[in-house]
Image 1 (cartoon, helix red, strand yellow):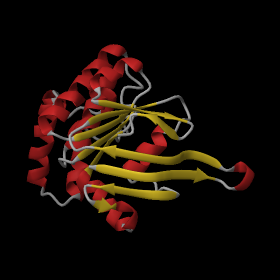
Image 2: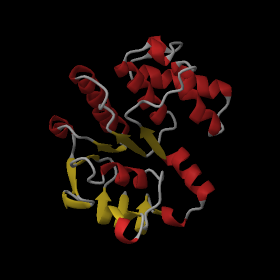
Image 3: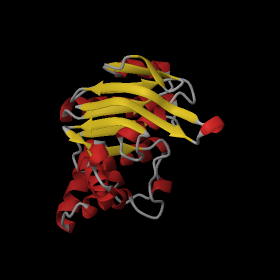
Image 4: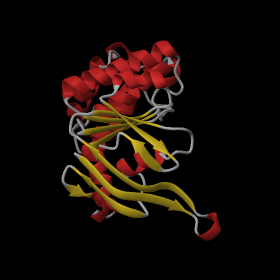
Length: 224
């Protein structure tokens, strides 16, 4: 479970102070597929960055799976991200010089798996997302939808409890967006992983168990 209490993120100070998040309370249950929506500048990505430990709140507390992550030092936060969280970026964030398998391989090696274990895990996860025949392809040799599936595989390879996706369909057409959303929904159901996804498309909402709507840094509906 994710429990955020009075989360705020403030940039600047005085007359130039910007409240990207302003006293947000949020609860996300284990196994939920939750969408975060709102207009540009409403605080969607800021909230996801806090949940993914990519940033720290200015005020408030965040507890993930019983751990008060605000009490963790930088090394502790890094290990928490590595072992418990998977992150999917809208621009894929793949290393262009590495193959699909090699892009997925990196988190597993950092986690301490052997070469043999990493290779087996990478190929298993590529099969899971339907890309077993793209093992040796570079990102530039794959379509946008295939690259995003590699990014999802990379997020899944360490079997994290929580997947965080920041507009993963933003650079895809409707057909590929549907493929990606169907895949994420399938993985959410079969692997029982919690998924939190930022989206700006209204039609995506049919995939979510619940929709959290943000406006001006505040939750206006769906917080619990």
